[in-house]
Length: 142
Image (tube, rainbow, N blue to C red; front, side, top):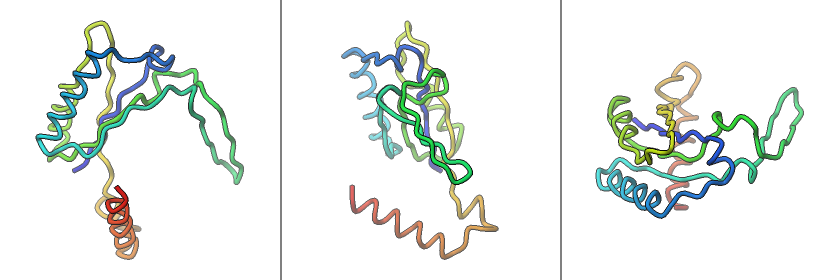
């Protein structure tokens, strides 16, 4: 099973707070620990919402809104993609994320959907084959 551990943003991170060297070092060590355990699929941080945009599509109309966005606690500051055997194991890894004592860290752990498994009624074999081809193409492009 694949899970995404989502790092929630806050007012400071969305204002462009730069982590200290010690924080970067702790995070690099944590990432290496997950890689050594064979569970790390990907890990990235995101720039603040002021350097992004929202794209909303509704009723055939597309609306673009430039950042920054006011509700920082609903924003994402970064993520890890991991492959583990259970939600409990994903939560265990999330509980090890380095967090300086002076900073409140909020994480969300979400399972990545396997469309063929979870939506078997409408997810055809043809769609599954197309998804497999796409995953192979993505892996080749890495």
